[in-house]
Length: 69
Image (cartoon, rainbow, N blue to C red; front, top):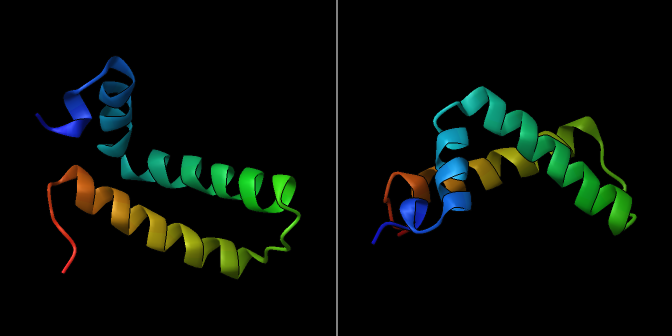
């Protein structure tokens, strides 16, 4: 079974990932909340954007069923 449809929460997450702009904004919020606020790691806009691009690339690949090389 595809992970995106295995639970109600995953289904909502799958719907979010279909709107890439919203997913990117949400991921930015989560990155800042986790790394900067909870772990006190200093972030610049550039580092946040770089981390976000890596994480979103991975999530979108998983969402579309692409396995990393």
